[in-house]
Amino acid sequence: MGLYGAERWILALVRHLDPGEVESIVAVIRDAPSLNAPLCSSAAQLGLRTHIFEAHGRVNWSAVSRLRGYLLENDVQILHTHGYKTDLIGLLATRRTPCRLVSTPHGWSVQAGIALRMYEGLDRMIFPLFDAVAPLSESLFAELQRRPAVRSKLQLILNGVDIAEIDATGSVAPQIAQWQQEDCFVIGYIGQLISRKGLTVLLEAFARLDHPRKRLAILGEGAQRADLEAHAANLGLGSSVAFFGFRPDRLAFLKGFDVFVLPSHLEGIPRCLMESMAAGVMTIATDIPGCTDLISPGRTGMLFPVDDVGALTEKLRQSASPEVRASLVRNAREFVVANYSATAMAARYQQLYRGLLKSVRGVSAEYG
Image (cartoon, rainbow, N blue to C red):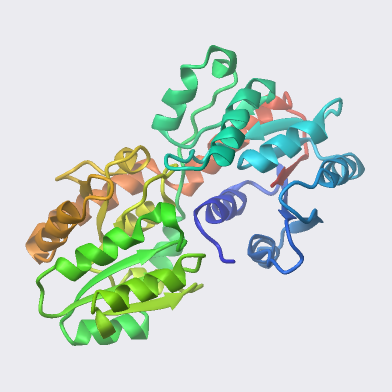
């Protein structure tokens, strides 16, 4: 396991909350003893309190009683949950306690099995029982606003990216720097290697791209990695594609990309796109909610239809021109800095917490 969009979102939030007013505790529910908890490890490095609830198996209701006991024992006043599983467990654990409950929906699946659709449907049904629901994109907010029962609980707080962390990354990763020295056209992806990310489309579009010095860097881990590596081999891509695995120095890789591609079927509002845009890297993504919150075609990046290999190939061909990329990356950087900073996001959440507790001092907030 590694740190991906939702985990980095939580870290960006807690890093920018005022510790004089908010004491943050970062917690996870661990489904299996073999799993790591990188979110807690990273939060601990920031000097924050952390906790791991051991509740092994897909459904383990002992997590409810364990979480409830922890909330009461530590006088936690706000529980902030992410995802259908922690939303449901958090709701049950906080019933008949003074702890206030906030959920941040990150998005829902489009091409999902019946079980996942049922869980996500249940998640939306229980939102009226929360004290606040804070979707992180305008498209998610608009969808939930159509549900009268949850409308009064909604707070639109846009996702944010840590601009200072990006700007502090100076040097390019040596592996990418070597490609730059060879005057290669470098295309990259950073994220989970799972089916909903649409990475077979990226590989196939890259294979079709007619460019003498093209390179593709894929960073991340996931269940699909072996299949993707086999697919790349079957396409005859050879050494022009490199799978680097999960990299804590992902920003050093990102800063060496000419183009960042996100071919997903589903996103909330992608932090990877915000990071790419803030880093001054040309960005191409699928034309889906979340991506369209960030990318205005021809102004801040490029969009293509889901699973359309031909369309993505054409966008890659166009973006091989430095002249085409120049104005798009400048506009994209300005847009993200103006609208999606982690500092502004944290200030809005702090205001929300303060309102929920009616100015009670010394707020203790747990993130799960």
